[in-house]
Image (cartoon, rainbow, N blue to C red):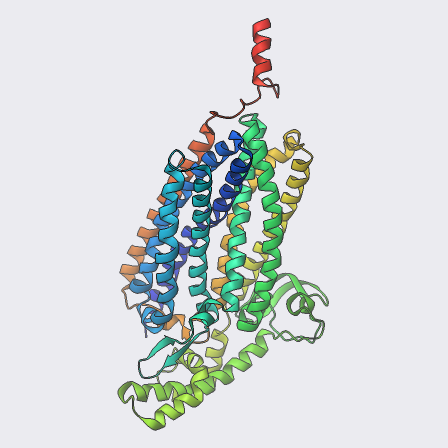
Length: 529
């Protein structure tokens, strides 16, 4: 048994590093394709203003990319240092997408970023545009392989447990890569990055428009961000629904926690708009409900029953009972791998091995477990309902807010009226943090909803950690938080510095002066005076 405090601190440390790192990821994913779109217009039209846009937004992208790389490198080492049992248990599967990500995506992205930044005078327009698209492709391929690895943790496909080696072994790379959870999550996460980049560009452009600085660049950037954003936001909401539909089949406990469904209702079930779940009392202390909405929302039918937490706990209790012989057989096989009787018993019950592991937290000898211990382990299979319910609703609410923002931004931009909507220009910069909060809430929803598993249904979290001391974990957690907070401070300082400095005006029309009059007109007026 690993000290529970060590497990909790290990989880907090990985959560902190992941959430810090993910502050940089969405902007990187989205900005690459926005830069590619801007440069495409520059190459096809030859208008220098679009090259200026690529150079300016590319400078902000590079700040974000550099710090994103710095925060991401340590995460892969944490698997070995803080989660050694997990690394040994699933290393054959988990290592494959991480290795491909490093070799195929990260190095490609990093190499072509150098050409993108320093190649303006060394490459032709078409060559430089191709490089920019390769940077965008590389950044999104990085996300793909990371999410394939995470998809295995959410819905393990393409692997089986070998009782002789005591490890998970890869059986089908295509099943691993093309699992429904991994592919749905990749598209959903990538498009969320496009939304983040669009709001960032729109917010900064709104500042310039409000201040009447760099108006030509800001007006064009705002229009591209608005169109990019309204399409991406609609896509991320639609694909979020698809991801929820996939997750409902792979992780019914996550879905029940997201909706605070303590009891199974006959279809069509009611939808909890707002609720105050109590994990200890196994009920909602308060709820505002809309009848008949939940079933079509989750199942796209009016008749399919959505299992509640009570039904899931009862089913998991049976799986725990069925997993007891598998754990007992595995104990025999650990000392005698050729024991035919133990192998036969293990094969008959291996589907529920992970649920048997859950029981080991309460009974060292699972064959002697009491009904109360089995029930306690079954309730452990339900994630934190309060955190899951409110993280999910915060994400959805912010998604709808961003959709409304981009609809207005598109209308004002298409009408070429945005510079006159002073209230909207004041609002836009305040929207910049919103997609980051939504992205973080999405990851919290995904990761808390997977608990109590590191690999859903196979490996409990409490078994996965390394046997460090509490003091070591406190020291390392404090160090990571301080280091990563300094990275955030550096990014904020550099972003604000270069946004205040603004783009260089070489090669583009001068910014309007005198409240909107062209600079040339202003010079003529001064000459007349």
